[in-house]
Length: 435
Ligand code: GLY
Ligand code: MN
Ligand code: MN
Image (cartoon, rainbow, N blue to C red; front, side, top):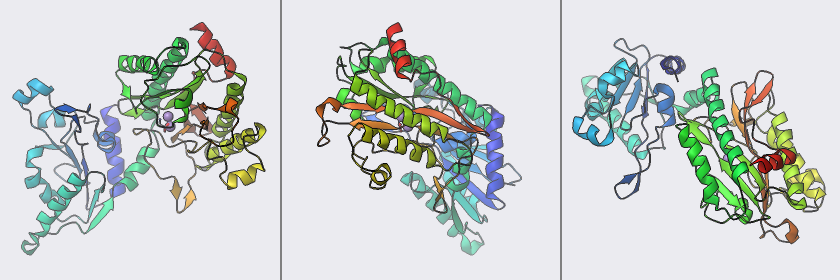
């Protein structure tokens, strides 16, 4: 992302904050995995959205109208000894020269410097409840100002949820963000095509997972979330991530995997037969999910509300379950009674962006919000017929199908960012036969 895109975002946020306000945003903490081993570091999405700054132990402060500079970054100092182990740091010069900070301070000095920046401000914008250590630090800085009230210092009187303005901004993607998300979706699409081409009975789920990892890393990306590669019964486990079973002839395999590129996620699911040919039962279920996805995608357009794709998918899924005699009764009544929940227990999508389940409200004043150009949603209906559901003929057992694409709302409808992964029965079987 270009530096000017980050500058534009800071400007827009500061305009929304108004005068005499200050915003404070923390970097994500580093997280231990096990003794002496850390998880790969991933910057906090809000801080990255506003700065592109990738380092831990940093704090962004925005003060609209501040004469000596509105964009302040606290970050680690250069340290040749530590950099031998962990690689280069931007330091304060880098924060100014490479990231455009007006002022930069060592993060070790934050307790001395930051309270003075809060003094006299009316409103303090921050996110509370995500990072208890940082919440505590903010209260400490505010209390430092309060402690000097007899000397005339005035602490911010109002704490304002930063996520209201900031997450509304993040919900509407700019052209540059949409291009980044399209690139991510296309890398993931390539990996899904590769998995279809390679899949053979007897392979392990992790062998297919390995193809995703290789393609994602070759694109300088990383998994946006733990990948799901579930054969047979495992495809009915929504958050299955063990990926260590053998793929059996005659089963389906469900793969939900997406790359994250420069902190933007993709999220794609495909389901296909391990041996390349759908059985009649698998095909019947698959066709229902495919039609439900088409109906839902068709409902992604400006002016429709958030829940309309879900409602469209539900109609098709429940009608399909009735046609297969897996449910009995009137479709609308079955929907009202949520009788479909043993087979379809999640929603049809979510916002997609820097976070795979991205930020942004789904309702406004109690009403489903309207879709607008620049929003990106996933469309991911599924049917999961686990062998534990009572009174289901065993020929349907362990057929788990989900089909998921990434869809951007445009001014006149939508565009599918993840286009190009086979989806119809004929296309899936052809792609597998070519492999
Ligand atoms: N892969 C996460 C989801 O589909 O919501
Ligand atoms: Mn999803
Ligand atoms: Mn997914």
